[in-house]
Length: 349
Image (cartoon, rainbow, N blue to C red):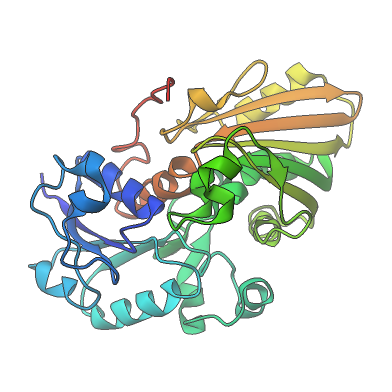
């Protein structure tokens, strides 16, 4: 069976490391280059000791040099874990250099999550390659049929958790379209570079909100939900930093258009996600330990009259980033969504 060469740009961050881990165990993708501007020439094992056996003798490659490592004319799978604002320009240069080859890109940064330049620049500032926007689309794989574009902008981690709750409620016309959400994320969501918010003495046994009603994933969620469902919605989001390394627990509040029991709402979501391998509608509250380090998501519901609560648990680095990216790349190459991603959560992390 032929393997597909995979390139990981921005390979030294937490998302980059998760992409390397998932590629190491993937039956069809093989790492062709782990690209890093800051650590090129250094062994992968120096940055990721847990990957030492998987990538013995493999060094990070400098941007611009990795092309020499990709032989033949096989189609390429390119994953970008570069920072937003930088990823678009890097991918634009790469696609220009590979214009004579078949390439699929999945960008885990924010640069291709919005359909138009104006929407992106209202949130993130100047776009690095607006001419490429039409080549990308964005969304959670479970909400989209087939491969909607040649390249994908993978939604953010908070956005993935919210979209898993919000999109089916809008698509099934079950709510008024006004949502309030409160989400708690682990410290890996802040990236690998040490900052006050991820410093252990500050984060351990602590819980605090940040960017209240001003987090940039909120407009991303509304834009993607509008594209997928055609519905205009309103979202008020409060993110929190939690005292754990991985995972997101999201609570979404919504008003129903008609009275439903919790069983009826849960069944509606089960029907909506009937073909979604990685999404489980559970009784009671989803738990992080059931999903952390896996590509699975748990969703729970509660209802009182016309007020509904939908809770979602995902791993921010897998389902919310690297796993979602690999799931999309599987689909772009005609593989089953689940290929290389069915590993169970380790639970006792």
